[in-house]
Image (tube, rainbow, N blue to C red; front, side, top):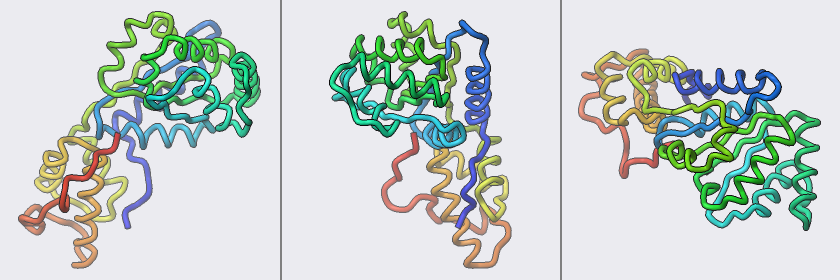
Length: 239
């Protein structure tokens, strides 16, 4: 089994630095961040790590969300039953998050752009709590947010998760894999995964399993041969 550790790729390092800057910002400086990027760039894993590290409140937007259902979802994450009035929920959430200094993570934030009232409610939460609020979305959300100035001007940090480079792939192998790969096999893994951290992890699991079965401490491209790195249908990439 591979090591269950987070690889500190460039995206993870940028996210950690961004959160630190938001959490320690001067009073009056906006405290919202946008995390965005392509599928497979490792956003989900990095956000999960940061959320656990900061005791954050995490909600995932859906196409059916309204301002009330958004606030109800946050209420439930805080261990409270949703209330009838939107303003009452807003005040309860703000009070709880301020007291505990819980940062708020809103995933699938692309859905928020469909409803101006949801953006207003999120802006209110940010203004009432002064805790970090991180929105997580797909590549392209950064352009659409520009047309929502009431929210965009409160975003002080923008973190783009890009497809990994070879240095990130090497970091991933060193972090999670208990066997070594030669440069040729590493390059093949990175190329076939198209830089996806999620797909590279799938491939590394296969490589490590074969290496352990053969008592190999290091696997070369020649040893791996023509074997597939990904079995069957291409696995769904990590967001």
